[in-house]
Length: 517
Ligand code: ADP
Image (cartoon, rainbow, N blue to C red; front, top):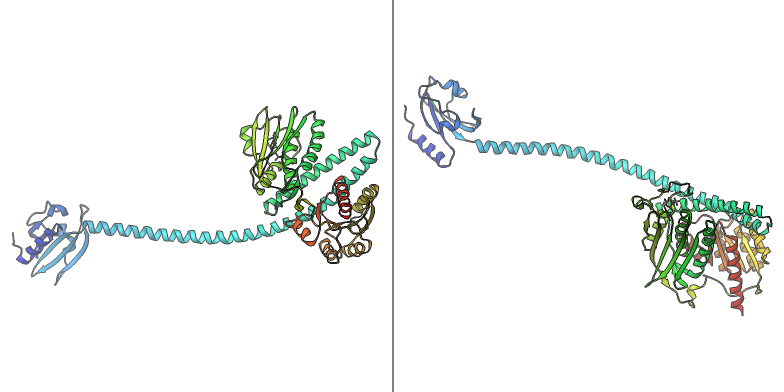
């Protein structure tokens, strides 16, 4: 065996000290192995012997014609290891020095793998970003379309609201008038049927409109001085008779202050919804309304001895259009959804407790402020000082362009002894009011020539101090506030209950007489 030169041996020792598993093989010009040293087994050369033909084992050394040292990096060995192979030409011989590069190669491969994965991820991310951009643009288009259709829906709803309420005012008003005149029981019962259907239609319309307004965040609650005693009396007189028709008992328990500040219109709507359901779904027993007061909160509960609600349905009954009732009761499945949202807008929570076959109890607690009965806040807004007539009867002006409604007001008011005048546009209303000095003006807000709000403002600027009551068929967000700001004393929503109209008229006239004395 040939000997390795000293310089080479020193190199091999240094590599061994660095754990690089050196292996050196000397190959002569005939490609025969003439010397070897180092970790042959590590590189898979355990069987290599002196005199072996190197061509087979080291084909990459063959015919190189080298004149100076070169390094072949990361040469893969048959056994899976890798080596940097330094090839050193020495006269007619070649030294091949194998240096372990397995770990380095593996690290490099792992790095390459990571780089490949990263490249794929970047590509994927780019694709996702692109999809996201498309989805965002799509969403923007859809949102614009939704906004446009929501605006169109809003216009449709307020238009419909006006279209429905005005004829319903006529229907209900004339039915009331005919009922008072009719002495025949058959006619009276037909009229009751018409009234019941018209009221049902009205409540369906109200619910559909409210649901749409709630959906668009347009329904606001508006606190105002409210007489809880008269509300409770009013509601119980309605439900006492409805319950009696089904041979149910109706009970009212109330322990509340008389005057409080809350949204009386919405509270009444919720109580009517809950009581309406209680009477509708109960076939025997009783329906109870409880009202009590606790630390600036009004607690209310409506309970019945009806069929109850299976627990599986309880979480769904507050969803719009959900109806778990399988019998033929009328309803659109909106009452509870609206009531729940109204109670939340008023700062409370609507809850239900129900036991199948025993009954249900719906309740809530809302914040409210108690008002001192003598405080001026409990008075209707804007009632002026005495002006014109001071007798128990008085002169009433109605500014309204719907002839049927004008005729209806005329019939009710003249029948009650009032002097009645009317105008069909806002400008005329201003002129007539300033000339005739009516004790009360009922002012439709949707008038031709000059709208009701502008007419009211003109009257107030001209120091007309008597009550002006706004009438509207299409309530929208902030309407009530705008009417009061323009100088209206109060605000009535169509369809107007004629008995309520007479009560208000009597009260306002009595108020004036009292102020004059
Ligand atoms: P509607 O009464 O118009 O169907 P609601 O939203 O008021 O709609 O009520 C939803 C459902 O809840 C009703 O269909 C009925 O199944 C159930 N429900 C409501 N109140 C009662 C009650 N007092 N007793 C039994 N079931 C009730």
